[in-house]
Image (cartoon, rainbow, N blue to C red; front, side, top):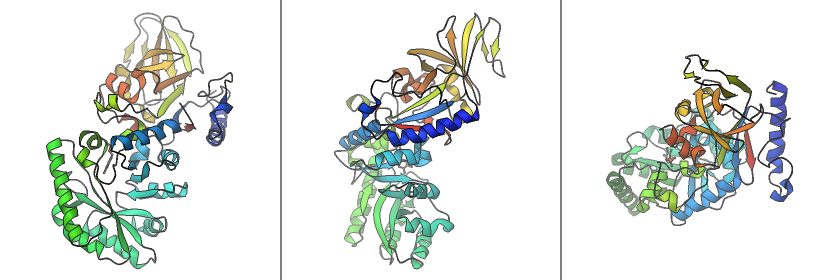
Length: 409
Ligand SMILES: *Cc1c(COP(=O)(O)O)cnc(C)c1O
């Protein structure tokens, strides 16, 4: 079932699915298979499922949390492992989304090539060889140093097009942006540069509240000073997910969350998660590829990490930490399989084992949900709690994981 031809079939199926999901949900009807599960004959080993509805709903809720301000969605790191092109395509039609922000120039171009219409802010640097392409594709380029401004100015010398830029100010994060004591000078220089316009001015807040408030004050002072000088600073933004929730004065003209878009909060047990219940937007699924009954004394894995103490059925899923599933899962995570939760007992580079107990109805080919909205134990936050880690773990998912997009789940 796991041979290459079936993988190819699956990919074809995925392509077909991606185009039919726009049909009314009623067409899925109550057919024999659940509308979320793939037909068995089109078997893939593991994959991600994204919910259009959950992404759209989250965008709406986030904008409400920020008093109806627009949302600039941060989709760096391949949209935290979930597929930057896929997520941007879903959110490109949301009225709450101003645009997308990321840090790699090639991914900014990939979004445009995939047909994304909204604004795209490149928060990072770019290789000179991509410069003209970035300008042609209306990517907003960040001015984060004197050198970056020079680089963008030299691009404008070779281009008839106005170049949209963003002033990236460091108000205390200490790792990116123009140090604020140099910001006035560079901003006025950028403003006076022919062929450049300033579309955004932004900075990033830290989490400690007192310091974040100080950062906001510094930022607002700078904006005022620049406005007095006649510099058009464009739209302003400061707030990643944490500040968006923690500090309403951080909202500015728009907010700039990453993790909230996917339905997770930046920390576990935040009060806001009760007031604003976001929906996890994705599922990570895998088929059972092997099922064996092991006996007392048997062990599992290279290091013989798991020792079988009484006869038990062990399922092997063909996904491991090499694919981005967190290796900490073997310390308490659960997976959902045919309606029940089972403990993960071992994670290797390519395999994950789960214990099904002394008797089981599970069959090879059945589908396990490793992450999903169905049960508190397998939501991204629930998983993070069980393995005593944070809520951003999906960031390690490999780009090659196939993605299926559904209207609703
Ligand atoms: C990553 C990032 C964000 C989003 O952070 P979240 O905690 O995921 O909301 C916002 N702004 C900048 C500059 C970032 O690098």
